[in-house]
Image (cartoon, rainbow, N blue to C red; front, side, top):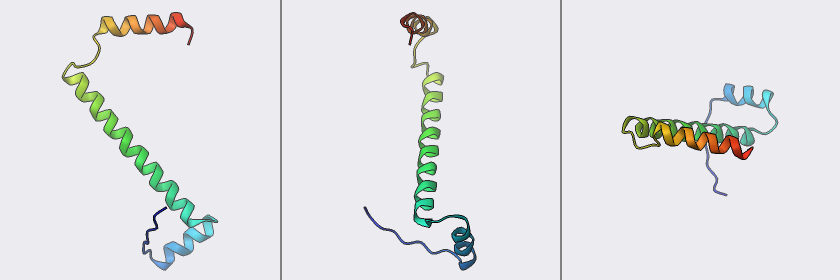
Length: 74
Protein backbone atom coordinates (compact mmCIF):
# COMPACT_ATOMS: atom_id res chain seq x y z
CA UNK A 1 0.00 0.00 0.00
CA UNK A 2 1.30 3.43 -0.88
CA UNK A 3 1.90 5.92 1.87
CA UNK A 4 1.04 9.59 1.80
CA UNK A 5 1.84 12.38 4.15
CA UNK A 6 -0.44 15.27 5.07
CA UNK A 7 0.12 18.28 7.26
CA UNK A 8 -2.53 19.42 9.70
CA UNK A 9 -2.52 22.12 12.35
CA UNK A 10 -1.58 20.90 15.84
CA UNK A 11 -5.01 21.87 17.20
CA UNK A 12 -6.73 19.65 14.64
CA UNK A 13 -4.43 16.72 15.36
CA UNK A 14 -5.08 17.09 19.08
CA UNK A 15 -8.84 17.13 18.45
CA UNK A 16 -8.66 14.06 16.20
CA UNK A 17 -6.52 12.17 18.70
CA UNK A 18 -9.09 12.88 21.42
CA UNK A 19 -11.91 11.49 19.26
CA UNK A 20 -10.39 8.42 17.58
CA UNK A 21 -7.84 5.76 18.37
CA UNK A 22 -6.40 5.46 14.88
CA UNK A 23 -6.18 8.65 12.86
CA UNK A 24 -4.95 6.79 9.77
CA UNK A 25 -8.07 4.62 9.79
CA UNK A 26 -10.21 7.74 10.14
CA UNK A 27 -8.55 9.39 7.16
CA UNK A 28 -8.89 6.21 5.09
CA UNK A 29 -12.58 5.95 6.00
CA UNK A 30 -13.22 9.59 5.11
CA UNK A 31 -11.50 9.19 1.75
CA UNK A 32 -13.51 6.03 1.00
CA UNK A 33 -16.73 7.88 1.82
CA UNK A 34 -15.67 10.76 -0.41
CA UNK A 35 -14.85 8.33 -3.24
CA UNK A 36 -18.28 6.69 -2.90
CA UNK A 37 -19.98 10.11 -2.99
CA UNK A 38 -18.07 10.99 -6.16
CA UNK A 39 -19.08 7.71 -7.80
CA UNK A 40 -22.72 8.19 -6.76
CA UNK A 41 -22.72 11.72 -8.16
CA UNK A 42 -21.20 10.55 -11.46
CA UNK A 43 -23.80 7.79 -11.72
CA UNK A 44 -26.60 10.28 -11.08
CA UNK A 45 -25.28 12.54 -13.86
CA UNK A 46 -25.00 9.58 -16.23
CA UNK A 47 -28.57 8.48 -15.43
CA UNK A 48 -29.85 12.00 -16.00
CA UNK A 49 -28.12 12.12 -19.39
CA UNK A 50 -29.56 8.74 -20.38
CA UNK A 51 -33.02 10.02 -19.45
CA UNK A 52 -32.49 13.34 -21.21
CA UNK A 53 -31.27 11.70 -24.40
CA UNK A 54 -33.90 8.99 -24.12
CA UNK A 55 -31.26 6.27 -24.39
CA UNK A 56 -32.79 4.11 -21.69
CA UNK A 57 -35.65 1.73 -21.71
CA UNK A 58 -39.02 2.92 -22.85
CA UNK A 59 -41.84 2.84 -20.34
CA UNK A 60 -43.28 -0.32 -21.93
CA UNK A 61 -39.98 -2.16 -21.56
CA UNK A 62 -39.59 -0.89 -18.02
CA UNK A 63 -43.09 -2.03 -17.05
CA UNK A 64 -42.45 -5.45 -18.60
CA UNK A 65 -39.18 -5.79 -16.71
CA UNK A 66 -40.87 -4.84 -13.42
CA UNK A 67 -43.68 -7.32 -14.07
CA UNK A 68 -41.15 -10.08 -14.85
CA UNK A 69 -39.16 -9.24 -11.74
CA UNK A 70 -42.28 -9.30 -9.54
CA UNK A 71 -43.37 -12.62 -11.07
CA UNK A 72 -39.96 -14.14 -10.38
CA UNK A 73 -40.44 -13.58 -6.65
CA UNK A 74 -37.09 -11.85 -6.19
